[in-house]
Image (cartoon, rainbow, N blue to C red; front, side, top):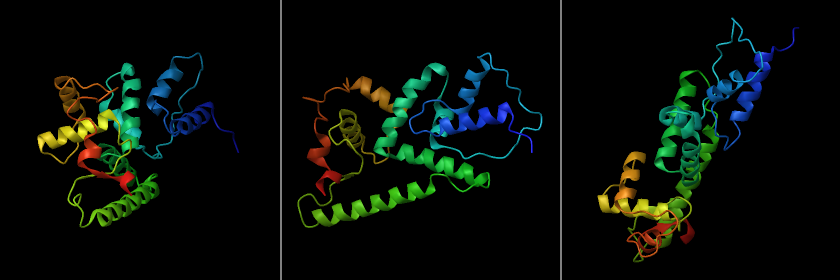
Length: 206
């Protein structure tokens, strides 16, 4: 049985590295880096067309990346979205899962996502039960992390100002931040100062 070609070995390494949580480059970008080196790796004519699992991060990057200079900024944005587990993050997870299904693959992050969904449902039930019959009953819930984060407080305040429940898009958020002189280091003295603690019920309440 013949050994693996250099192309297959490199492909396996790149695929494994790109699955590491927090790694900022996609497989396509990694191959572009390889092409810039002195390594002579010939792509086989009979290259396998076997589909690979799709990650939510790669879907996000493909949709938003305009050039190599965007990588660091988008990586930070993805990290924040993932930590908050907001609606935009869930949308990319679902898009990746749908792509896996279209390729005849079992969604690679399905069990984790399902577990997170169950935990969130339980959290909602616990918070709801805790505030039942109190003055906090009926307040909107914040189910993300970093309750005292300036950006989280700003986003929740802005959504209330706009009268919307859905997440604010990236482009709109950037525009609103400029308009409101948002400072990501401090919210002291601003209208959104401690908005979540003062106006919402959240995980820390449990």
